[in-house]
Length: 539
Image (tube, rainbow, N blue to C red):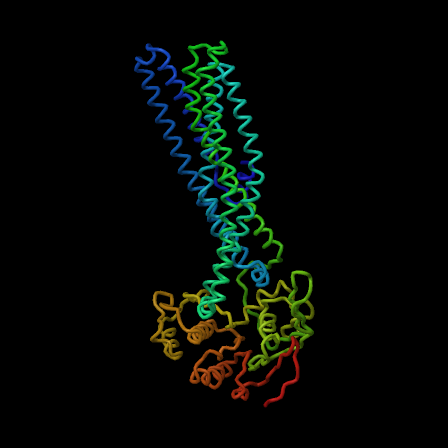
């Protein structure tokens, strides 16, 4: 419970005193209800006294009211905790680096922001209920000591056995729960493979079946780990259950025979044990949830530590693009490291520069380093060696935040937002006019500050991305094979009209292209091969 409170305090400042106060009141009032009932059972005089009936009624009202208050407050706390954890992680992620997201994978992040925060929301209220159970147990135990010290000692012995059994069971259970969580992240990755690679598996039955079998294998492994863990806890629960019932039998039938307790105390002890049954079972049944929330908290902390391990530069003010006349990449190098420390691909050293208003095409075969160069150019990757200069002045990592504001990009793996985020006072009429120019007016419209449809073909989505870039009005436009998915009409318009218009506006265009028939529309052409810039001659 201590680590849970520390986790909660780390993420939210909501007061928890009122929650614990009402949980304690609910637990103590439950014990007083038992005392009042036992008093009524033990004497006709008491049971016929209306004041004791009124006392019982008031205690029930107090118990229910306190229980309701802390349950409502706990639900609010759990909701605020899960919300705050999600927002805090997303706040960090949006200021981390592209390489971090590429390395960690979407499955890990999705699982932490959905499954693990969901566990927090579902489990925290139950754990707080265990506080009431503990207080009830202690209060009833104290009451039992006044009835029969021997009976109370037997109860302590039972609890000692229970704690020992659960402690032994908890170690492998917690380990299996942790492994299950890791495998669930892999399971989400496989699901993402199915959804993202649907076209590929649709036309290749062997690939389809192999991926499906891989998913089923992981699902069975996750289910097996969870089932084994729960089975272990259930076996322990049944053993404790049987022990408790045997204890009632011992108190009722055996102890009076050996004169350990008096017959007058049997009813009081038996009813106390029955009242104790609820809080005790509440505490035991909460253990699987406790293990789940413990694993989820560890996973969330690990993700936070991973994000914090990447140096983040968060500007105090909204960054503004610097005035630029020229940008140079000087002896820039970048490596993709393998898991064993080897280098999977190296770009550079590369020297590349351009001036304001230039149109530069980058050509080269697949795997030549064109896209990596684009990511270095736009500041999405930091160079491992070499420098990036703006107007002849070197920029460091802290200045990349403002440097990136120069660019509007359409990469091959681009994403279309339904809203034009980051733009203010948007002229819907102009947007819809641009949709007409892009041949998209019959496919989508801009209405209520969003596009009505983004489920378009790849070529149409690229035109929509181009439109959004125009509205951003940046200094430099980067296109990674934008024309590759266009029909002949829009391919021609891209090179002869769109880029021409940008040149007239003083914009700089850097485009990856394979359309040699339009190479004459560029000011310069750069060729990439095996991660380096090589000489290029027009065909």
